[in-house]
Length: 255
Image (cartoon, rainbow, N blue to C red):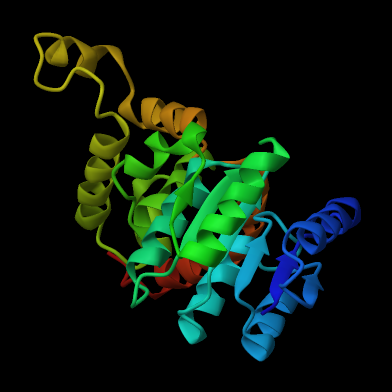
């Protein structure tokens, strides 16, 4: 009965190994990985009873690694151990778990928790097959789920793309983008003035696109690391799409 640790920080990985070897002596060996790709390979080869995954790692994130592990090894029990408990990761984890059959046992805990609570999480997930959610983030696990488009669109809003550009990027009609963004705004701004006497005023007073972006930042649905990745990917796409657009303009019949 083995446990697999995925953590790119050497000191934190050593701490986890020593802690788990001491408190769960029957679980041997304690396997280690320093990045997302390595943990997927180890998990599928060794079939450990428990995986403890950091979320932000080189290459594949812990969330994407979990998706790959559960796809081929749905019995895997996984604890996400992170100092970046952003809601965007929680949203993605919830979507992944919903697609796994039978539903897997998993946990989500902030690294800043005391050691005793972390050990309780390990025991509950490993031995009882229970789902364990850090009390500080239970509300985030009850928020409306964002679709893949909605989660992606938040980064396009942050990077300043127009609805026209989002439509080209996502191969959608302009009306389709507008409809999907309206649904996204409704999910993000549930506590705003909709249905109240202030609704008409707020529609005039606020830019809903900017308000949605602020709410996404506040809740951790956008973070710096993922935004940098999205920016790099967008620059590559823009370079290609500018050429495509120029070609489209040239091929139009002259009036």
